[in-house]
Length: 341
Ligand code: FAD
Image (cartoon, rainbow, N blue to C red):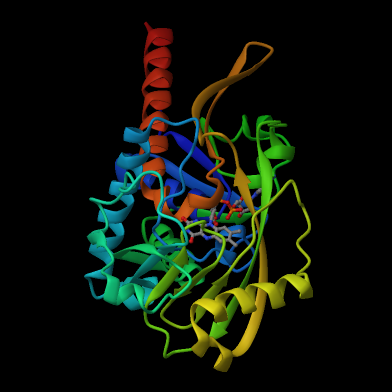
């Protein structure tokens, strides 16, 4: 069989990192990324990019922990390299505070982030409305620079990148041997997945360079995440809402909530409002499927549905998707050598 041709559909953090993992694990493959939108116009561009995992109800915790660990290890190495600034990856320390003590004292990811511990009474004095908290150091991606860095890595590895809207995965069967579906919320339309739904998130990106520590209310709704160039203030979680239009009332509400956690944000400037649709599901769809028409087969690997935690687990799920692509190629090679016998 000639060099296997793999198409990755989607150019958010999931598509780009999956394409990179495939190119790294299968150097003989010819990899192409096809997407109707690229940075800065994807959901991934809107994200805060904090490595604090969201929990997928339908996925075993040890699997989620492995995805997070692989992602943390990968980005930690970038943060510790000369590429850190260009890739937009940095360590950030801060606090996750609770009005009431959480049921589980230790989240599953507490031994992967750095220096995780319960906050002292003295530290909690910063948050008079909260009575319990965790402090730790984690990683943050400044999302648009990270996506551009991934694109640059892909081009350097020889991956082809084209703008194209795919209306049916089958349309790719004559050009590619394996197709990888990383279309995020686009999978609702592309593959008719009824288990996938949008969870609308509105955030503010502000200039407030004196804010150096992250602050996250334990319910996950209100957060202040400082990046290299701007601070992300959040947020909202609106299940089933497809609107990408910013809502001015919500902007004021987010700003007020964040100022009540960090009063110095009253002086924030250059406030930009962004909206994104989290591609949400009970569990990430990370799965092989063989499409077939008239005896012709097209192996597909799905990797979408990362909801509120795509940045936190992207490298782990990309590695698993690349492994599934490897299995598809091995099966194709077996069947083509069998056909020659
Ligand atoms: P996307 O970024 O949406 O990419 C999908 C790609 O597929 C796009 O390029 C699109 O153009 C392409 N596409 C779709 N359909 C087609 C088609 N038919 N043909 C061709 N191309 C197609 N996660 C974290 O881990 N930490 C955070 O702090 C965090 N904060 C967030 C804050 C907000 C406000 C939001 C909205 C999300 C946040 N997330 C966070 C979640 C994270 O953004 C998502 O999980 C992640 O971006 C999903 O990435 P994706 O590549 O699957 O989707």
